[in-house]
Image (tube, rainbow, N blue to C red; front, side):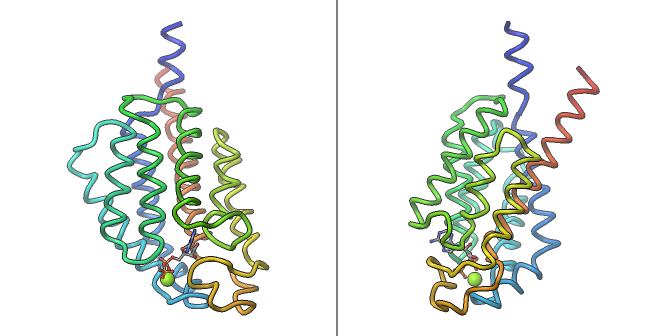
Amino acid sequence: MADVAEEAARLDAGFVRRWLSITATDIDQEADRLTQLDSAIGDADHGANLRRGFTAVRAALADGAASTPGGVLILAGRTLVSTVGGASGPLYGTLLRSTGKALGDAERITDEQLAEALRAGVEAVARLGGAAAGDKTMLDTLLPAVAALPGYEAARQAAVDGAESTVPLRARKGRASYLGDRSIGHLDPGAASSVLLLAALAEAAGEAAREAGQHG
Ligand code: ADP
Ligand code: MG
C-alpha cells in the first residue's frame, strides 16, 4: 500500500519548477502576440507585464530556495505580485500563491491534489477580481481547464476552447469593460495567456509521465 501511495504522489518541487520554466519560455515567445491582443481591448502591456513577471519568477526559483511544490508556487506567486504592475500580476500571483497554500508543505503530491489545489487557486482569483465565467477574462480559460483536471490534455483543450469562447463576449471586468460593445469580437489577452500556463502544465506532466515510465 505504501508503495502505491508513493507512486501516486509523484509530483515534486522539480515538477513545479519545470512547469513554471516552460511557462516562462512560452510567455517570452508569445509576449508580442499577448501585447497585440491587449492593444485591441486594453493598454498594450499584457505581454510585457507577463514577460517581466515570469523572467523574475525564473530568477527567483533558480537558487533552489523552495523545496516543496507548495513552496515553489508561493514564491512564484509572490514574485509575480511584486514585479507585475498590471491587473494580471496580482491575479496570476494569487492563483499561484493560493494553489501553493492549498498544497501545504508536502514534498510530493498526487495529480488529484494538484487539481484540487488549482481549483482553490482559481476560486481565489475569482474572489480577488470579482469576475465570473462569461465576463471575458482569464477565468473563462481557467475555470473549464481546472474542472477538467487531473486530465492534463483535457485541461489544455478546455483552456484553448475557453479562451476562444471569449471572442464574442462583451467584457464585464478589467480595462476591456470600459469599451463596452467594442470589446466584442476580440480574444481576451488574459484568457490567451492562461492557455500558455495550462499548455505548459500538460507538457511538464507528459515529461514526468514519460520519466516515470522509463524508471518505473
Ligand atoms: P491591465 O489590464 O492592468 O493592463 P494586463 O493587461 O496585464 O493588466 O491584464 C489584462 C487581463 O487581466 C485581461 O485580459 C483579463 O483577462 C484579466 N483581468 C482583468 N481584470 C480582471 C478581473 N477583475 N478578474 C479576472 N481577470 C481580470
Ligand atoms: Mg493591459
